[in-house]
Image (cartoon, rainbow, N blue to C red; front, side):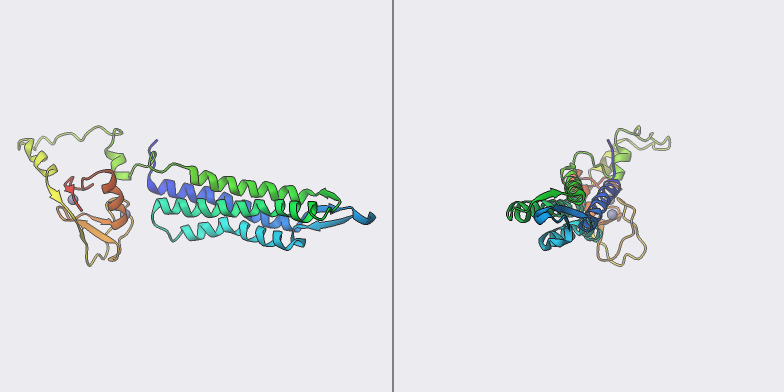
Length: 242
Ligand SMILES: [Zn+2]
Ligand SMILES: [Zn+2]
């Protein structure tokens, strides 16, 4: 399967949004009855927020998935986006799930409170598991196997090789000579309106670099990721060192 970096990023944000919704619903379960107490002949409903530890665990855990999306918004590298959304959502899910478990073990069993768990207790467990599962799903999504950068995708097996121009009367060594050119990556200064040759997003003078052979402009992160896969300039095919 061929997917671009943008598609994988937006998929992480979409799945992460599911975790944020689960976290938000988890917080709302604090308003429901978590336990029906039958001690002393009086039936008493205890809500999630009646237990201070659960109140804190559930609020923090429930908000973490949403917070992870906010943080990932400021992160550029795909691996870091995955780690932030997946990691924080998983931690949030663990906290959310531990909230009702904590209540049951330390507040109900410990003090021998008689009664039975109520709907909110199960809803809190369920939403915590969903948040945790979504975080784990993101963390377990492999990155390297399925990502193909856009330009490489276009030149891979999908399209036949470009036909040789009839006017190209020079010997084929001309093409080979161009491939054998050696280039390196330079800082590009005074970039006003350039776009990155790899991702097509605008460049700024802080993150712009260029190929010394053809002058093609890239983001520093984009060409670093590119060179990891393939040591040739995506624009002129010069071999890139450094
Ligand atoms: Zn770029
Ligand atoms: Zn080049």
